[in-house]
Length: 254
Image (cartoon, rainbow, N blue to C red; front, side, top):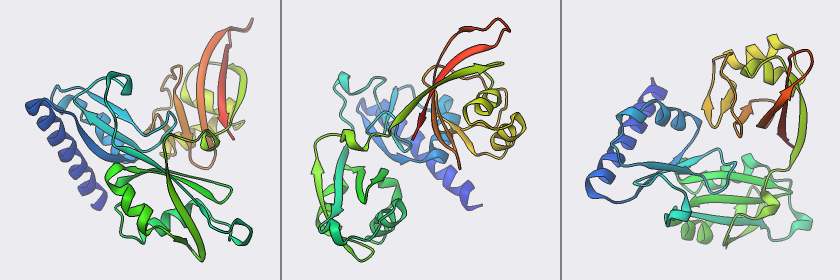
């Protein structure tokens, strides 16, 4: 029941933002949507006012996305999303505890911050990149000083640091079809039955949207997340083998 009520709130909020954007002729932004929020957005597109919209999470592979109502284009069209990048790191790295994503997120939540106001949180070698709403950045800079027993220092950065971009491994192989279950079987090196189980149990997401359709067909640049297995990006189909199998390539995030 709680999940349903949350979905109803998200639906009403998004529709209201589209209405105000359409009637006032201005750009309005949602909070950061998680996978369930993005799913709600996809389901209600036909109910939105015709104001145009564009999603952005601060970098191409972001999982948590903010919706801008009032435009159909990226930042090149002059639309600047109210997103700030903050870099946090131990003040004394030599004596720091091992800090995880859960540790950093827990410390932020302990400040009373609503999770929807923070986008992706990426942790690498005890340092973190925090993507948040502009209006929240000064508060975090002033109050965020400790993760577990480790003192940290937080500073604003002008752009997404390349060091925090996920590393990718290029892969290629052949599959019988572009069906999601066939691709996952090959890309994850698991049985077709196992890939079907993962999809049916709601553990597979394409571009942030949960997919339970085994026959869902992949398109170039689709980003696939599989709980327990990591992330993939489907690249392209480059022909067929003599046995009529499709030659495909993809990237695996490592």
